[in-house]
Length: 112
Length: 116
Image 1 (tube, rainbow over the protein chains, first blue to last red):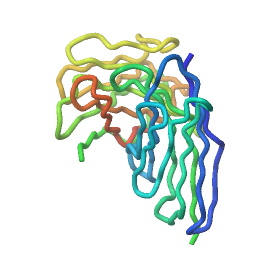
Image 2: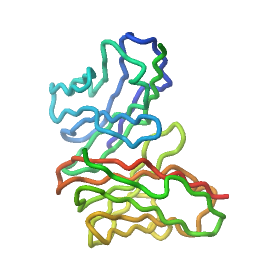
Image 3: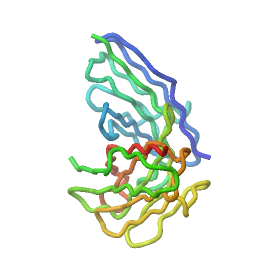
Image 4: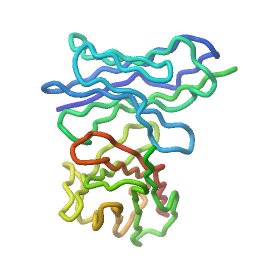
């Protein structure tokens, strides 16, 4: 079946450090891939997405590239800020519509 | 942006009672809403897909008689945990899809249920 695996957290970084959160997936067909972010006390928000192989999603300095050959969608940011502290979820959608399969989430803590 | 609101944000109840959680899309109509359950340090597990005006579609392993879902209007879906037990204690999250089959989802803040 379809599944998503993320690197375990928590991840603790200093401000301006480089961030990578690994995400790999298993799916039949050609899923769409997403990164969602959950700030403390808030609901999940879409951070970025990619709908086909080699697409790069980007938003707020975060990027992720849909790699079909490695079935990966790693999240990167060149210089993190304290305000980036949150839980990040990788997800896939294997069908049209909003049915998502999530990874377990990775907590990021950025220290000043 | 679009807003989805859940109520209550947290609830404590006694074992054996039923609890209703509401999910409302505040500024858009949602034909489809989704209910997830999240355990500590774990992923969001899809429980069911709620379709306005029709029966919900439950994921494998989810008891439909235990978790009653009603989607009576285009802006409201409810999840009722019937005869709650301590093992039902969890964080329940809903999402609403803007439009039909758009994949554009907006999430509620979640509702934490604690069953004593």
